[in-house]
Image 1 (cartoon, rainbow, N blue to C red):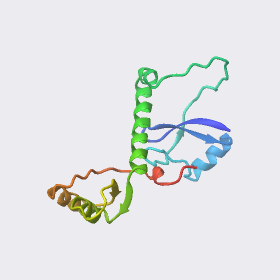
Image 2: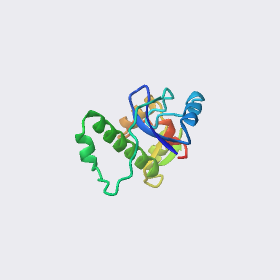
Image 3: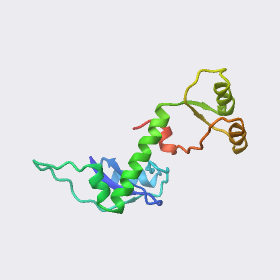
Image 4: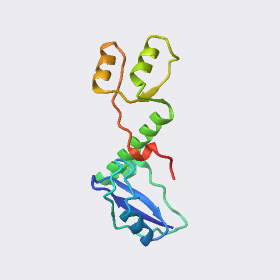
Length: 149
């Protein structure tokens, strides 16, 4: 198994695990490799140092990674953002295009209070806000909507 350092056209960095270099190239050419942040399929391989097994590996705390410069800070921020998105997905019910109707039902006590997510037009979201119903736009990256491999 090879662990490769990858980057999308939007400069998001991530790791990918492949059986071989040829496996990575084959999947990349067939647009099967996508950025977990933005679903971009224009992926390039970055140089990487070999991983060495040493008897006393030192754990690097997230604060140390952030202190290692802009790249470390970007990686830390991406990880925190992905955790937040996963938290929202795991702790809300997807009501799809019924979002405006279900938000009103909850607000007016006609349905059980709970966290929901779904789709609403800009006009529907504004109408909900005018009624005193808090709504927030939140784009979920396409890869997070699919099951993890």
